[in-house]
Amino acid sequence: VARRLFGNLLALLRTFVYLLGIAWASGAIYYDAPLPSDSGLDRGLLAGGYALVVLLTLVALGSRRRRFFGWVVAVALVAIPWGLKKPTRKADWKPTCSRLPSATIEGDLVTFHNFRNFTYDETGKPTERWETRVLDLSKLEGLDFAHHVLRHELLAHPLLCFDFGDAGHAAFSVEVRYRNDQEFSPLRGLYKQYNLIYLVGDEGDFLHERVAVRNEPVRLYRSTYPLERIREIFRETIDAMNALQERPMFYNSLTANCTTSYIRQAPAEKRPRFDYRIILNGLIESLLYERELISTDGLSFEDLVRRATINEAAREAHGDPSYSELIRQDRPGF
Image 1: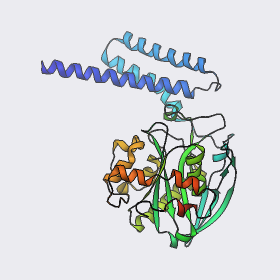
Image 2 (image 1 turned 90 degrees about the horizontal axis):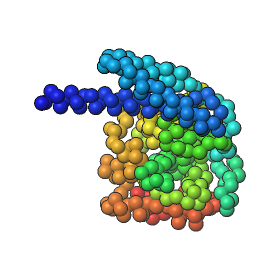
Image 3 (image 1 turned 60 degrees about the vertical axis):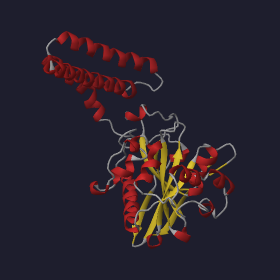
Image 4 (image 1 turned 90 degrees about the vertical axis):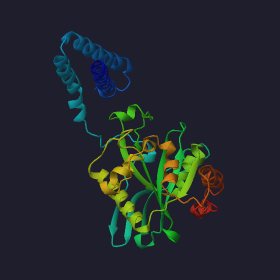
C-alpha cells in the first residue's frame, strides 16, 4: 500500500512538473513571440495551440521515458530562443525613466549623473529635471527605508534613502524601465517584457510622486544597520546602478524586482536568509520589525506603522527646502 501511495504521489508530482513547464512555455510564446504587440488574438492562438499539441503528443507517446524526452524537447524549443533574448538598449522610454543614472567616486566625493529631481503639477504631470549632484561620502550617517504600499497590499515598493546630514538625502528606487506603450503586470514581469532600472534622485521627487500623484500610503523607517554596513550597501547600490550602463538587465517579478535586486547586489555571505515576505513584499515591514532592522522606539508593530506614515506631512512639506527634515519630524527612530 505504501509503495502504491508513493508511486501515485510521484506520478502526481511528475504531472505537475510537466504542466508547469508547458504553462511557462505557453506564456513565453504569448508574451515573447516575435509578433506585433497588438496581436493578442494571434498570440493567444499560438500559445494555446502549442499547449494543446504538446499535451496530445505526450499522451500519444505512451511510455514514461518517451513522455519525459518529448516534454524536454517541447520546452527546450521555447526555452532556448527565449534564453537568447537580450534587453533593448534604445526605446521610446517614459519620461520618468528616460535616462540611465550613473555615479563616479573620487576619494570621498560621489558625483551623480542624471540625478532625478522632477516636480509635478496638480494633475500629476511631471516637469523633468535631471541634475548632476555631488555628495561627500564622509558625511554619510544613516540609511532609511521608505515603504510605498501598492494597490494590492501584498505588494509594495521599497526605496533606500541615504542620509548625508546637512548635505541632504539620496534616494534609490529599483523599477521597471517602461516604454511609453507599457503598463505593469506581475505575470508579464515573469517574462522578458521590461528592462530594469536603478533610479537615484531627490526625496522631494520620489516620495512626493507616491504620496500626492499616486495617492498611496508611504512609511519611513530608520535602519539599525551599523554605519560600516550602510557604506557597503551604498557602494553596492552604486555598482549595481552603474553596471546597467554597460549591461542592461531584464526586470523579473520574482528574481530581479524592486526588492530582490537589493538582495542580489550584496555579497552572498551578507544576504538575508529567505523569507516569503521578501516575495510578498507588502509584508516586509513585519520582517524588518521582527529582525530588528528598523528602529521601533519600543512601539508595537501596529503603532510603528501608524507613526511611520508620512503622507500628511509630505503633502504639507511639498516644495519646502527642508522637505526631508519635515517628513521625519516625530517619526520613530529619527
